[in-house]
Length: 266
Image 1 (spheres, rainbow, N blue to C red):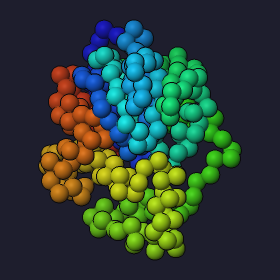
Image 2: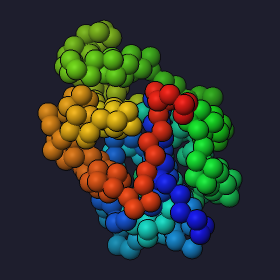
Image 3: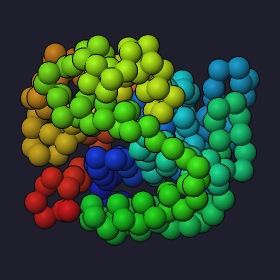
């Protein structure tokens, strides 16, 4: 891939997708399950989890939410897709993975098909709606018919998204769906893989990115998304994604933030 294209950051309500280079190893514990994929066959991803003595190299990697992991992409162009919080994407992709190490799975069946899709998005600088439709079809090709989503967790996620300025307490959320606090905490972690507070921070990072795509500065976007200041946002970004926001935003090849809320890109 000799031509240099702008990196892409697709922001959808259900998922996010970054396609571009990363310029340093990442130590992260994400707020959502993630599919990472190297678009350079000669530059595989290497990963290291707790209890593992030597890195494992692979082209495709499926990471559950909340797992601490170190990843080195060797400056390759990668696709990094944060999956839906309710777990259907993860359930479907898990059925495609050929190798496992602890809670991590790698080497997906049909790697060439995934590579073709992500390369089409990157080199074609694909629109939001087209990229979402093609990705949705690919990710959910084998979701199990027995996979269940708890409607009360769906309602809690909706409340978190719709009340970003209110910071509703866990007690308020539990009361709204007629559950005790311990039961809601248990169900939410089972469904999403992360605690409620961590999911709320993850969603605030998403809203911050949307605001920046709409032209806000990092500081203004962070405050509008419920962070106390840009420092709080940057700390959360680094904690969950293993890098400073500037690593993504200040790239020599530039970055396009693509959101359906922006006129002309949906």
